[in-house]
Amino acid sequence: MKVEQLYTGCLAEAAYYIESKGEAVIIDPLRETSPYLDLAKQDGAKIKYILETHFHADFVSGHLDLAKETGGTIVYGPTAKPNFEAHVATDGEILKVGDVTIKVLHTPGHTMESTTYLLRDESGKDYAIFTGDTLFLGDVGRPDLAVKSDLSREDLAGFLFDSLREKIMPLADEVIVYPGHGAGSACGKKMSSDTSGLLGDQKKLNYALRADMTKEEFVKEVTDGLVEPPQYFPKNAVMNKMGYESIENVLEQGLKPLSVRAFKAAWEESDALVIDTRNREDFPQGYIPGSMFVGLDGSFATWVGTLITDLQKPILYIAEPGKEEEVVTRLARVGYDNPIGFLDGGVEAWSDAGETVETIENIEVDAFAELYQEVDVVDVRKASEFDSQHLVDAENVPLDFIFRHFSSLDTDKKYYLYCASGYRSLIAASLLKANGFDKVVNIIGGFKAISEKGLPLTQFTEQSTEL
Image (cartoon, rainbow, N blue to C red; front, top):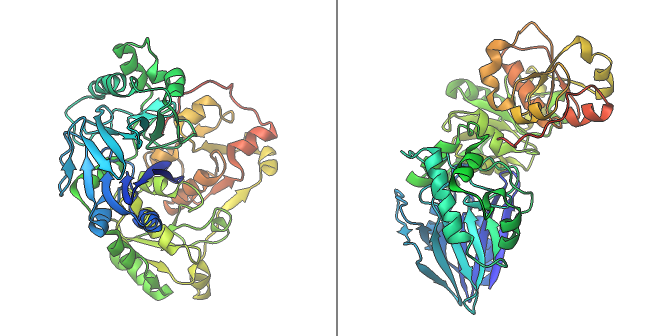
């Protein structure tokens, strides 16, 4: 028996590959199929099942393409109603894979179809659980992401309480927990940075698994502090349930190199959005006016999904040479299936053609320290980060909801922006400049540099982690 976790840091998402005696299972695959096909090929195995723990909201799964390419059966837990051919398993059903078995445990709560898969080894002993978004290390799934549910988040939290205590907590302490996400995912609040662990440790350390916890206490703690999820979540969940275009078609369309003239024409004719995906050092030194920075060196897919409301919006992009396929793939992972090409030669070609290039002013923290008391400072971190501690007199304009704050900002003022390290503040700076705020300055190193410099901060307070 082989168990392999395929962890994708950009989405803090874990997919799984299980193989025994030439048969393989994939659990919660990402959109691209090649990693799973490669593993099966290496083992000389046939992919028999593609198991989905639920209709994911934070990414588009690769189940349809993978099933088409391998002939594997897509499996969902009880109550799921996918709009395509799939096996909807019954609670307690046993799936045989080589010399091992997988037991279907219906664990509603995160969503009503949420299911945990219990892997038993060759001897029939419980070995591991693949919990999806039902149980994380240090946390449990948020109960407010179900697709078109008539149930309240409190109702779903109640189901989750029962699922954990009836299906998961009775299992042996030595059973390994393989969750669907780790720290950084918006599907929970207090997730550990670890990506696997023992169930016995979770029984001791996870606040939601306290043995003496009442259902009322559980519901209150699980729902407390939840904020609005990223806008793309319900749209991705619908795609996962209803179906989507093959990623091969998306790649074919999105990997078209365009000359400066063709790029400009496509921009105008399709009313496209231009995303600059280069690193945070290169972008501010010269970029195409009106473009939006979202660097591949950060949480690219999550921020695209948070900030771009139309999944079908035509997208043109600038990428570092050789990174074009990664850009299109990461867009497709969160449902943006309409990239229409990239600028061949990048910003250098744009400049060489005589087109205007814009810059964003950066400032080192040493220079900022000499003038911060006399300028307008904007903290673009999440509200929970800001409330925990921030530079005295800074204004909080979370990047998550920046468009809602434009009306409260003054286009005549000069704003100095910071986040935790400088990635989000550069995204914010590009958006502000594209919307008429010409005087923006990005503070290099962000809050980390500000705090290390010893500038006056508000008193630290413990806050729960938000999205």
